[in-house]
Structures are given as C-alpha cells and as structure tokens.
Amino acid sequence: MPLPALIQKGVIAAGASADDYATTRHVFPYPSLAFGIGFGIAKDIEILANGFYLPQGLIDSIVDIAATPAITSGKPRFSSGSIVVEVRKVFFRDSRSYPAMSVALGGVYSDTKLGANIDFAELLGSSIDLGSTGKMKISGPLSFDAQVLGAGLEFAISKRLSVITPFARAGDCYRQGVVSSNVDLIATVSDSKG
Image 1 (cartoon, rainbow, N blue to C red):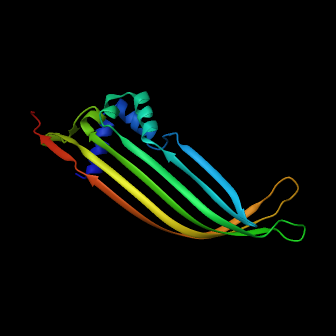
Image 2 (image 1 turned 135 degrees about the horizontal axis):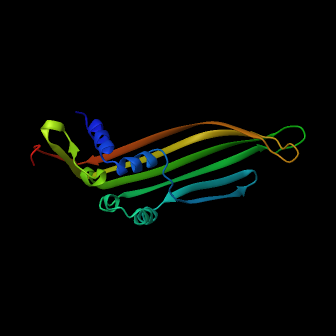
Image 3 (image 1 turned 90 degrees about the vertical axis):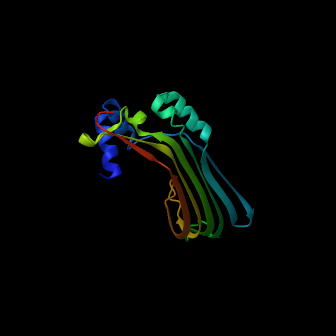
C-alpha cells in the first residue's frame, strides 16, 4: 500500500485529528515581518527593496498556543524569508502628452526551511491499521530547504487620471532554485496480536 494512502487511512481513523487535518490543510495563517524601502540615488534613478521574514520564534509561539502534544513533541522547525532589490530608471515622467515609463533591473533571493521529528502514531492518535497484517508506526526526522535566486527586467507604464493612477507592468525574470530534503522515517510493523 503506498505511503500517502496509509497516511490518509490513518487520518480518517483518527477521528478528531482528522477534523484538525481537514481544517488546516488549506488555510493556515502565520505572522511574518515585512519591510519595504526606496530612495532616489541620482536624477531619475531609484533603488527599491522589499521583503519578508518569518522567524522560528514566531513559529514557536504558534506551537505553544496550539499546545497539543502531537505538535509540540514533533518540534517543528520553519523559517522563511525573501528579499527583492531593484534599480529603476525613469525615462519619461507623467505629463499631459505622454504617460510615465520606466525600466527596472532587479534581483530576488528567498530561503525556506521546514523540518520536524514526526511520529505519525502520536500525531494521528493511533497506529495505522493494516488489517490482518497488523499495525504500523512511522516515525523519524524530515526536513526540506529551498533556496531561489533570480534576476529580471521589468517595463512599467502609468498615467495619472484625476485621483487615480492606473499602471501596467511587464517583465521577465530568470530564477534558479535548489531544493534539498532529508527524510529518515522508520516504519515498524507489529503483528495483529501485538
């Protein structure tokens, strides 16, 4: 039986834990620290930077609030951050005759780390029932790390119309990502009598 099917079978058999799984599977809010800054460095040239960081300390606070043994014993580790820096050159300022136009050259770096010590029997409230084969417990550490580095070029056009300024942007960005993972799960099957 494939591992995802075993996990799904265990979630269904877990009752209340299955409700928690269904609730958090699609929506899970998390706080983050965001920033943005920009300034001119010369005539018609601007540097803009923005990003966010989700530190481990905020995740620890969420886990403490959740305070369920299945979550806290797994010692989840999660942190994520991203920074975007661009240099924008304004070629035309907004006037009666033509809209504002600019070109930006930018770069992006992001890093996401996720890991935990998982014990599916503790998380689901019971071992996975394999019928006549017995029961199975799956546990061990797993971790993922994803890093993305990119660079791009963007063209922007905007025109002030009374109290609003509609704009359009088009560009292309080349990104290269590296994802690494470490999974060391151990499955222990006990006979149906044990």
